[in-house]
Image (cartoon, rainbow, N blue to C red):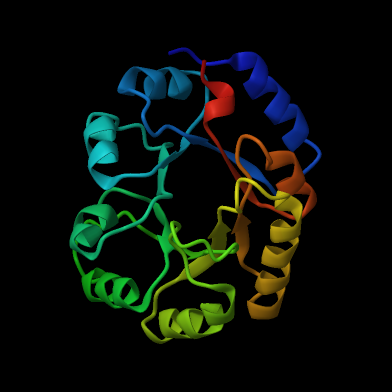
Length: 209
């Protein structure tokens, strides 16, 4: 497994046209060596899908510039570990999880300062995320529990045009809170997401070969 720096360069050139957007490199299923190489080349923002994998991979990485986000589902029994490992949890998606996170926010040595609500924008049964029509209620609960929500995240259906879903995400955000960031767009559709106002693109497979 190696890093495709030509692809990384192309992504960075695209991002120059969108000053409000950042690249998050998805390092799930990649080893620590890859992460360290990326860090040595000036990349510090990473996304991981699983708490246990991220815990093992990043346990010996102490660079203070590194920011690690959880972008996969979070089980309530992993909340305490996640809050001490990730700087941001992008997969807040249900009432039970919100209440468990809020209960643990008084622990010492917490790293997590930001939270995103994950929206199941395509209402797919196999995917996590709150349905769009239930977003307002979940967001209200987060506010009541003093959970700092900084953005919304989605993964559109793979077999349909992403742009329609990205536009829907932007409308949901604008109707809820225009100050929220949008985490949307991956390897195959990040250019479309940027045109629709994404602030954070999550790219993995495109830059690894």
